[in-house]
Length: 217
Image (cartoon, rainbow, N blue to C red; front, side, top):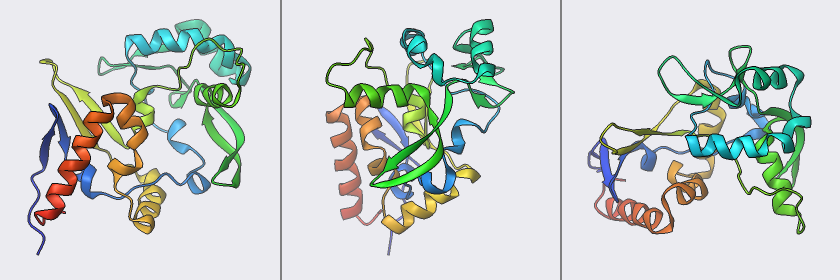
């Protein structure tokens, strides 16, 4: 019998929703084609430091952006404050991130045609492949994008909380996660390590292992 898992856990000073450990997820770009970049009513949350990093990358990715996106950036910059008071990336036509672009990509040896990509991440992939990169910054993309479907919230006292977000367009990701039996926290190992560090992620894994031994997972 599986015991009832507390809805909120604390790992290394970070509050996490327990479904980050229990839910199964793996992005399925072959099905969704990166739809999360072009759906929604606001841009991706960013920090001031990330805005500066993005501004340093704009010239590098300018040619990958649509004319509409270029016009928005020229008018209001790479980010704006939304109705909830959060700093987010600028958007086109009320939904598309300005850094949306389209290209064919290779995912585990399979070519996905005309996939919606982040121009910033596309640039970062080029940096990773090139031994002598012409780019100065190693910035990839906002951590909020990399962490999705985990969403981070920072409270006024500095407390950080992580929640699992369900979005209908990501149903294929949940289906693929179930097929692979891949928990959210394992799928998002790289961005979680990027955000909180190797030691924190190992502590998260240790907590998951202990809860499994105790019958909670």
